[in-house]
Amino acid sequence: MLQSLHIENVAVIEKTDIAFGSGLTALTGETGAGKSIVIDAINALLGERITRDVVRAGADRAYIAGVFDDLPRAVVSALEEMELSPEEDGTLLIQRSLTADGKGSCRIGGRPVTVSLLRQIGRMLVNIHGQHENQALLQQERHVEYLDRLGELQAVRDAYEQEYRTYCRVRRAIKAATLDEDEKAFRTERLTQQIAALDAAALRPGEEAELLSRREMARHAGKLAGVLQLARAAMEDDEAGGERGALTRLTDAVAALQGVGGIAPELAAVAARLQSSLYEVQAAAEEIQDFERSLSFNEQELNALEDRLALLQRLMRQHGVTDEQALLDKLESMRAELEGIQSSDAYIADLERQSDVARDATIAAAGRLTAARKEAAKRFEQDVCRQLTFLDMPHVRLEVSLEPTALTAIGGDKVEFLIASNPGEPPKSIAKTASGGELSRIMLALKSVLAGVDDIDTLVFDEVDAGISGRAAAKVGTLLRQIAARRQVLCVTHLAQIAACGHSHLLVSKSVSDGRTYTRVDDLNEADRLQELARIMGGEVTDTTLSAAAEMRARARE
Image (cartoon, rainbow, N blue to C red):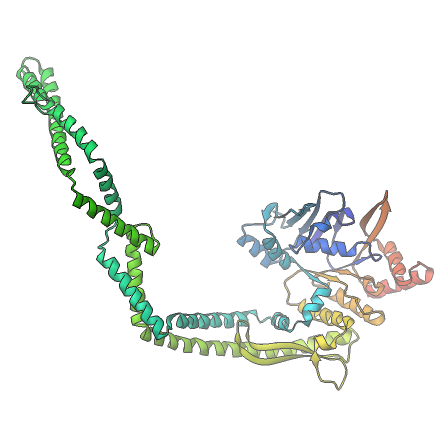
């Protein structure tokens, strides 16, 4: 639940710290004092949309921080998936700031996160109910979500969705495999040509690199030949000029040293090393001769080399790859595609059999989901009507309409909540029947029923008293207090009957100093609560209104 809230430079709030307890907390104050700003700050903390207009005039940035404790298990699991974690004491710090030029930042547990991640966690921590949620109640497509949550049908719905996804996957495979005859002929001819071209190329991995190296050698053949001739001349004898080369000189040196090896053994060792070097030089001379012979390029060979390179590079460009191995992989892929087209009739027949099985399984799962929704609808109608009767709407009857539809991702049912406002009238769409005050009480009845199955610990009700007064307001306050026995409830209200039911009471007030407006939030003690309740009832605090406030508080405690 929300343990504390820090608000800084948000609209008319310069700085305030609010501590929240369990149970029902009432927030009151004169119109324009800033009650809605507190709710907007909580909304922003939860990752909902925020604009730079909220930054207090003259301030560099707005800053909001909240501490949550007693985290629901689902929140802890979601944090673990995001590689985040609460503090050692189990609390979770959430921070959000927005600069005057519109730049913002979000943090969970001190670590930066995106707004979308913050929103994902925020919606698991707090449920804010305001007039916008009344509008959601008017949207028929949202009704199935309410029913499934109230009926705790997630497991049945998950089972259906799994079957439905399987069925859709098979149908997509059939669509992909089903080509008209013209398209099939076109793809077959094209693949056949491409496969033939690649087969004719006789691809070999690494060939392009070898050809590039060979071409580079050909381009510098003259220079290489000159260097090789110089090297070979240094090693071999020049018979015309009478010069002896390195090989002859080394041979003579080895023979001379071996001749005196018996006199000086250490020279025999030197002769052995020279003999080894002589073998290396002789081997090098042979390699030079071989390399020199390989440099014999003619124009025909060069043209063949260039043609082969051009072929390989053209094929790579055509197929969008960069080497021969990727071309070979592409070749295998095209062969598999061609085989698939040629054997597509058998493949499609197999997919159709799979589709029949998947369709039957999906229809069966949809039937189970519909049956579960019908049972949930009966309980839901009874529970909501009981709450509506308590809220002084005894003649209002809620019915859940379930009509069959084509199968979709959420099942085969069109769910709509219908309201009969008066006895003898047929039920009609909520959007065409309910007034603003009725919508607020219907939504509150839904929330009271939902509180038993919802895993969100904190509920915020803003403007829940719209369109109601008197006895109905007292009933709303009582029901909010009952919900608060299982959840933390924050309620912004203008009615004393509701505020009196709070386990705690926060007063939002506004003052002007040096031409600037300031808002503060105070936690009222019992005496101050009576003063505030008396003000709400009569505008002025009198003995009569104080007595009525004390009576309201006594009834609430009872």
